[in-house]
Length: 254
Image (tube, rainbow, N blue to C red; front, side, top):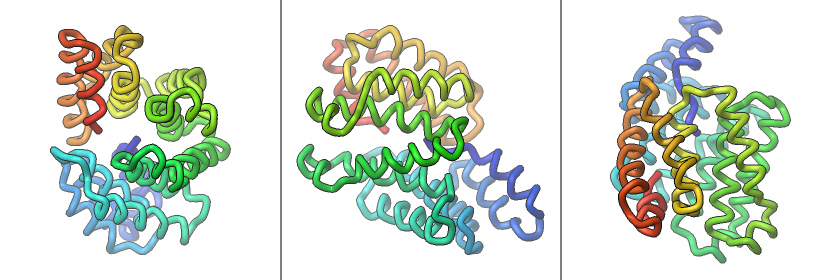
């Protein structure tokens, strides 16, 4: 879950327009999908907020592309998140962007390599720590919902047991996230995509409902629009193609 930047605009302005003009400009660039500009604007600041924002913009760029993001791009986002955490070890956004970066880095890895990296466990711990500090952080809740489903998909029952993943926990986290933020496109898209990649046949009804809900939301950012395009493609596949074909499509999406 990549946080919407209209919240950040309000945050930065409330802290003082002059001090945070670069971050306001970065947030506006982010909304428009100008991610390189967003990074450039945010990099002018040397704060935890700015570094976490750079990580978010780099991840948005990576996830918006037509192909799998490169390791270099993801590692750049990870480094920015880690710089935020060096400044403020409890920075919520820094922890979330680091968790997302780590999770994306495991995508091209074999199951064995992913386990050895420890990235999955670290990502989960980061998101859980955010929720421990703020139980209403729907971004962290949404991330964990997807994490539990993805671990089941990649690791099977044994892998899920070893890593403490639970489909029941996924559903609980997701229900709370949606209750808190029903108009978040990314929240609905990512969970529907994860379910479709895992088991498009069993969860067909739920997947369809969440994708339709994502498409019914007025997009606030260019990233929302990109995710809605993908949601429309996946919805058509879930409705008209074999479950295995829909699963394959979802597994290749971000």
